[in-house]
Image (cartoon, rainbow, N blue to C red; front, top):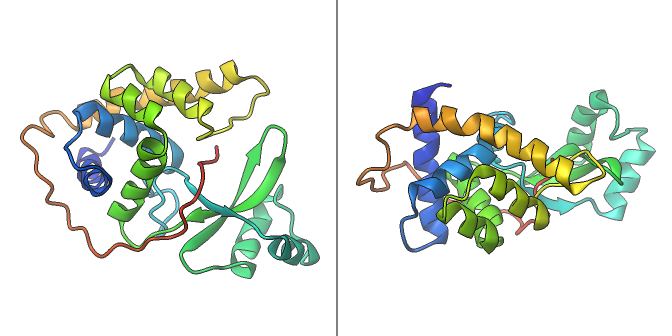
Length: 214
């Protein structure tokens, strides 16, 4: 893991957190959020230019938008169709991606998109912690990322690919557990007497959104 990159992401995450909450969090709160963000979208880097940190959705497609891509012969289950769908259904402040759920299968949906990393980090904090207080409590108490994965699933942050909850939670928790020691190692010494100093830039808010996807 690139330590310099993760240090930059950690500072953006802290600054985003302090936009949503008035007090500085325990270190574990930032570490857990970074695990989620790195797993979902590599802290926004997996979707260049969108700065979406947690695969956080913005809104589902309207019926008219669904009809539009269907008339164009595009299928969410076909990876090659996604770039065409993104162009066809482009909306300011949103980013179209395909997603899947065990019962629903593949579908298109709009994800939040931002101009700056810190805005994506703030949106993740809002979705993960502010709208899901049990996730925040788990992170504050440092209950472990497996417990966080359970609370995230129970609050419908993600759905997973299996029919049963236990398998989905186990898979997600395993991914977070793999990332945590790497992130911890990259951030050794960080956060001690830390004050926000990230270049924030103006915010670029989008829809309130609902939950993440994968």
